[in-house]
Image 1 (cartoon, rainbow, N blue to C red):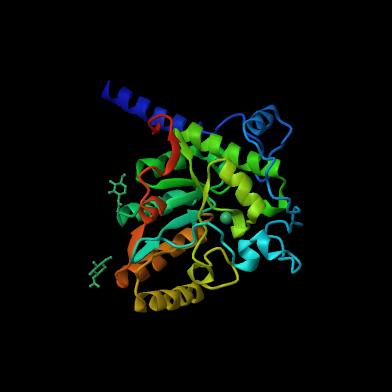
Image 2 (tube, rainbow, N blue to C red):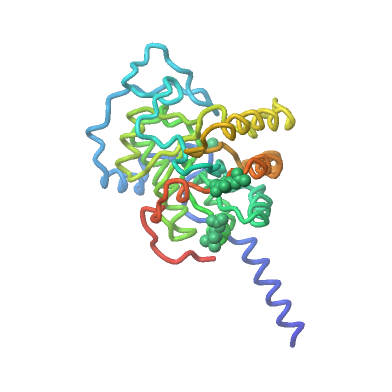
Length: 304
Ligand SMILES: *[C@@H]1O[C@H](CO)[C@@H](O)[C@H](O)[C@H]1NC(C)=O
Ligand SMILES: *[C@@H]1O[C@H](CO)[C@@H](O)[C@H](O)[C@H]1NC(C)=O
Ligand SMILES: [Zn+2]
């Protein structure tokens, strides 16, 4: 009898692992179709008629568009003009490393969760919606272990290269996937490549989103860059953190990190101790912002 019970448990675990892919979502790595019934319904709920008439930028696949020199400064394009408008670019909390990981969930995510758990640290995960639909279990585990979830769009396409309607589709499919997996309606987002202008901001605001960038190049770990060695990445971060630690530390910073692959996840346990060694404390977006309601809605208790 005991043997029998054990095998039932094992079977249930296997099923739970094999199953788990959200159904009825658009293909991954592609901007969702704006003509689908679902996107049409979302578009009816939002009035975009006041959106600034800024032309759609020409894309470079897998990257942000090149900055157009003739772009007007009032377009307020963060990646081209350093103009962040009311985007969040620093962690307002003193002496705090704003811990954020982008582009997950992936097969590499559980190893990062193990590490963060061992250090009792809670991060914000800027999730790619299509990855959430593929690996909802990882996202459920993030919630169960005290992490905060935020949006990084459906397909990770540069948002200034998309129409207003496509931006709605990118955000709402991601929102739906996370809602289905966890019962949480996202409130914070980070634009892929940090690519944003006032037109994109307008649409995001209409959907109820707050934008969180990172604190500029000095706080980009470059963990994503295969052309830079780990020792170079560690040296660059050491320099940035030395400079930060020598200052007044009255505000914190948002660091750019990724759980997109095993190599980015392996770098985290080498970088975070640099902060610990300098007595920098850690927080996620809700901790940095002092936000006790870091979601637009909590629809139901997370299913874990
Ligand atoms: C992380 O989240 C867990 C669960 O919500 C909480 O108990 C813990 O205090 C948090 N840890 C930190 C360092 O904030
Ligand atoms: C470490 O940082 C905390 C604030 O984050 C501060 O209260 C404490 O005094 C610092 N300790 C040292 C040794 O600098
Ligand atoms: Zn990204």
